[in-house]
Length: 101
Image 1 (cartoon, rainbow, N blue to C red):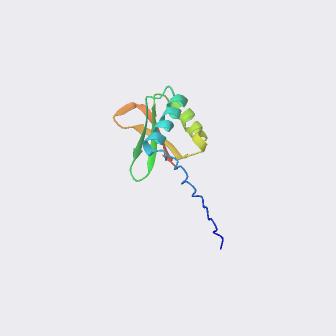
Image 2 (cartoon, helix red, strand yellow; image 1 turned 90 degrees about the vertical axis):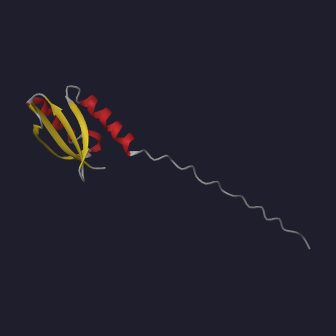
Image 3 (cartoon, rainbow, N blue to C red; image 1 turned 135 degrees about the horizontal axis):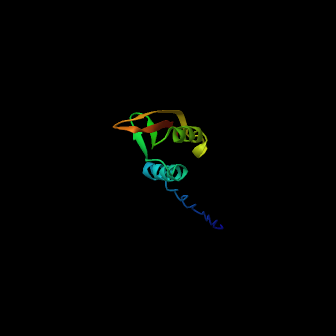
């Protein structure tokens, strides 16, 4: 009787790719936005059930430019773009957009 050797190879588990944290992802977006809008007074995110981007600027011309450019930035993740007053800063203007992921 001959012995049959059964050699089996065990496949290693695939390396898990490290997921990008939300903080890292938002940080990268902030870098892009700050470089796109260098004259902006403030660029920041707010979450109140939906993630929103706010860009505070000084002039009406900057409002128009920011609103027009946001729609095509970062693969079109910014929508519902609108502008209004900046709270507690009557001489600034705010462009706001919702962020889709």
